Image 1: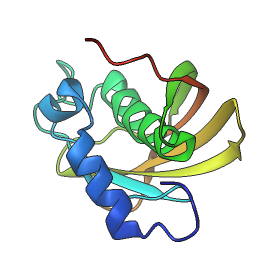
Image 2: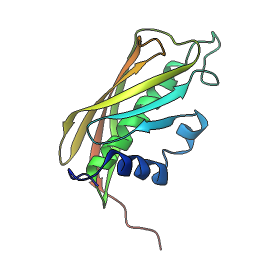
Image 3: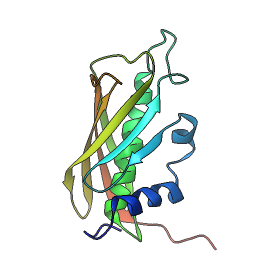
Image 4: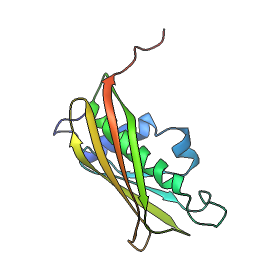
Length: 145
């Protein structure tokens, strides 16, 4: 899945078939572009707010981890599993309505570790959060009988 002949459409279809998980689904995360060098997803503010009606800081992190982990798993390829071992976020602005969009780019794509940066912007293009995730690549567990 990670060779140079993999198209953006094939990678986006891989995400749709695999799914991004129940939490990402509950939060309304929608992948709009996907590949090993760039992945993009958006998430609604509504339904993901804290009591002050600002997008919850944890929601930014869920968006970032969903993007970074899925991109790391695409890079890892068949028979491998990428799992998060570190994540951090710096929130610099609060989104209050509409959607936020996360753009995930690799910092390091190795055999055993990946590092991705996810920039999350509001609909006006203003940076709201910057997330960095490190994933460890390991052998996927054997399928249950």
